[in-house]
Image 1 (cartoon, one colour):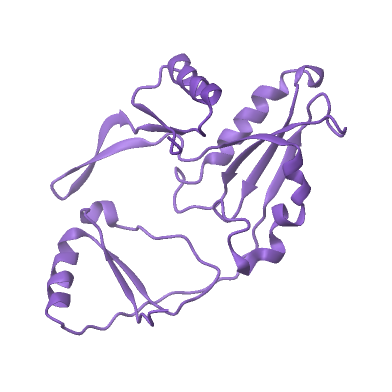
Image 2 (spheres, rainbow, N blue to C red):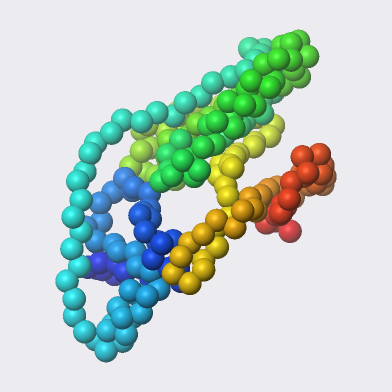
Length: 223
């Protein structure tokens, strides 16, 4: 709306942290080239911008049309296919700019494998696995409204009693040391986001204790 000709982001990060960084694709081309810069390269840009200097920003890129999938599968519970069935929905995204950013599907497969060893008659609820190809965006992008499985099947929500999402698993911590980005030898923080429900908060605490997670943060945004 502001008729921007281009965008420059300057991050408070060194070159090694910024090298190769890119953002997710969008369904609509805005014809506004975008550039990410580290703090050192960006300092000169900021100084020049304050002086009103002019520059040329050129984006060289190729566009490749690609078909991707929203994958939905079920591990049936004891009441699967009946009016009494309830579902727990496990969700993650299958797109991302790195293997540690989009490895949530591996977590979903591990959950499915674990619960599949329990007889169906002993599983009180059906487990629904939803791998989203648009980074948790169904319903929020008009460009893909016709392809949104959740929008085309709105009754799925009638049976869902809980939702659990996961991503960014197995991250290791890195620290900046001058211009270098070095592994610290520790795992990165585990972040558990929970809705404002006392039972879920207690379960999150129990999960941290049971698995002896080092450096875990439980976040309840509603509180």
